Amino acid sequence: MANADIATRVPIWARYLIDTMGYLGVFFVSFIGSATIIFPVPSFIVVFFVGAVMNPWLVGISAALGNALGELTGYLLGKGGGKIIEKRYKKGVGKYKEWFKKDRVFLLITIFAATPLPDDIVGLMCGIFNYNIKKFLLASFIGKLVLNLLLAWGGFYGLRWVLSVFGGQ
Image 1 (cartoon, rainbow, N blue to C red):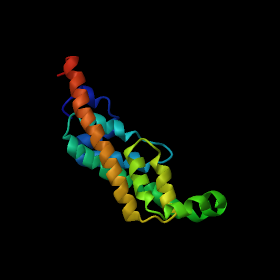
Image 2: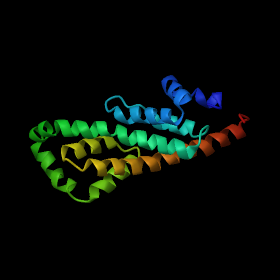
Image 3: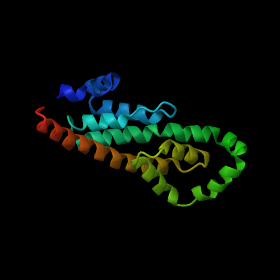
Image 4: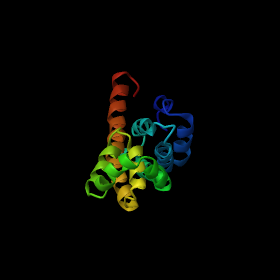
């Protein structure tokens, strides 16, 4: 990366991936960040800092693709364990089953993906209720694209401004 001060704020393994693979590294860091359900990896911080030293458009797109594909872990977990969850929590699940058949789910996925809301839970529910996987991926990508572009451009303008004010550039 171009600026060592900014690079030190990115975890070592993420820096290695990005330094050696560029935008593909951003993709992998974001994929790992979204694929982990129990132990979350804050890949959004990486996107913010890397957006300051790489092309923010390409950083946002690479990160969104990685995030959207990483969200499949929650979806597939819900799909695989759906019968068990439905059997165990029959009353609670029944309330949401009909709601998931309606067209609002795409918007819900997009909103959760574009915000810090826990979209892993939505992914699990989509898997449990057999929501269309293509629609799930598209909605996740759209939401993650909005989020990651905002983060990358925020890093681009925000960190450059801070560095210019405090003599870093």
